[in-house]
Amino acid sequence: MAIVEGKVAPAFTLGDAAGNKVSLKDFRGRNVIIYFYPRDDTPGCTKEAQGFRALWKKIERENAVVLGVSADSAASHKRFSDKYKLPFTLLSDPDKKVMTKYGAFGEKMMYGKKTIGVIRSTVWVGPDGKVRKHWAKVANAAEHPAKVLQVLQEASM
Image (tube, rainbow, N blue to C red; front, side, top):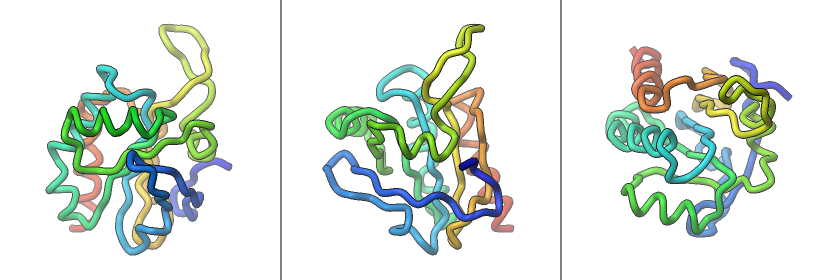
């Protein structure tokens, strides 16, 4: 199932760093920014997480939450979140089922070669549960959070 703007986002339930179950439906009525990233505490992933952290208050003002999703364990997420004081939830998708549903796992180009892995991408799910925007391939992890915020702000004008 491909992610299509205007269609209902695929439902999911994943564990967070504390072992709690978190479902997309828990955030009905709010904007949900789901960003998929390859691995905790790697350079690009850290820059992206720090970017969302730096813009957190502004993102919250847009009635939005941020959910970071990777295949890392809850323990890894806890260390990463604590180390960088991340104010948002990180979710574990070890079997990559949710990432696959969201087009965030599959074939990609890396250093000029085709490989299978996590595709850095982001999906904005609106308060109605429908996909508002899909960034299928995020090229610059450090700059991406600001672009997400800009789109959120423009939509609320």
